[in-house]
Image (tube, rainbow, N blue to C red; front, side):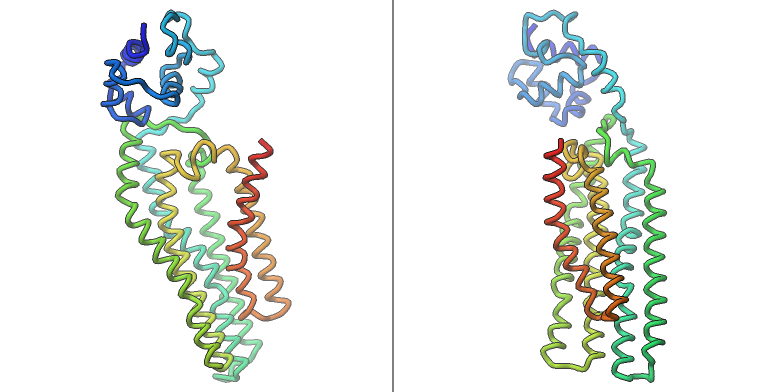
Length: 330
């Protein structure tokens, strides 16, 4: 038998229509039809995928003289394939709904962390300028109390969100297969969300860039200290709003990528994602410790906020190096 006949035979043997086979291969039904009628030939990657789907060897598909009894794949490969988690339509919809609900909460938690020192910085500026008769101790006491409450609230959201997401952890680390129709549905939803995603990213980045303008304007006018600290508070609020938008739309879009195994959730990325996640946790915990330690030591809350933009810029470069090191280990 030639390749086209073998594709037809194996498809019918599994009880699949041309559309169902096309869905599993992420191709059009017309492409499968052309393969089976010998009007075209699948490329090497598609042949490898056909072998995996049919549970046959590539030799069987490519070599006309190999009989059907000789083509079965090794038992250990079957066991490996059987361990792949299959995602049903119900599971996919439940996961996407959870992602949409989680997105504003997780983005809000990060925004809370950014906003946490705002009141402390503002009150510190007022106390230094002896406005409202506010003492330094009262300013620090009220500001630190609010800071700790906001950070505690953010940590609670992070932890509760992580616990609620336990059932979906396999989507981030394991290879998956989607049931018939799931991939097409997710692709359609992702396409519909693309404009929202791009707008969110664009507005978020613009807000982060524009956040420094109030501070620059105040510094250029040689304004009093309390005005400077107020402009720093405005800066943090604009950054928080920008980060919120970016994380919100990125979290929702990340859900589509997880189900489609694209972008940061492709099979190649999943192989070393766990190590990268450990690195990220250590990195941001260290940045937080530096920020708090430096701030409490110097009491310069109006200045130490610079730790966050610097840490954000460095994270991209450092994480890229970490990825290279992880790849080299493998």
